Image (tube, rainbow, N blue to C red):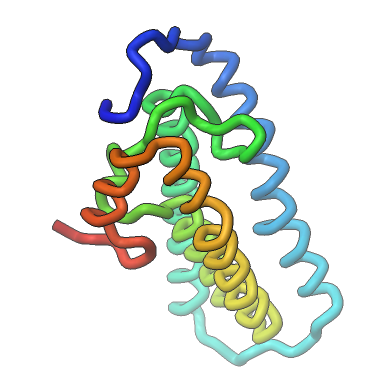
Length: 171
């Protein structure tokens, strides 16, 4: 892969997967489960939706979860690292869903939160989902993209030009 050091030794992927799983569980558990649960406990406002939107919400939650897990596995297998800023991938991850959109984990998290909005019929969760997307956007623009430019140079710049940040390419 362009931008990789040929002398890098492949790490123990089982160990890296364990680290990625711990990080992913902690982060997802906090932002996609714990905080929404706390919001639901504090807010009693609910929309009167029928069954169909709630079923769609469950499907969205499952889809978002699959996207996030697939991407985390890509960090381990292709990037030899984790999504954690303190344990980043050693190689630039550009395969699978990363060929379609540069930030599929955040897209998956947003899909999960939107699914929760429909399942729990909560305006508070909709505001939380919008706030989380804004926070993720700022993290990407202010921290992640500059860090990737420094770490991977021209390989990242080429990738950035070819792949959209948020709206996935479908072809």
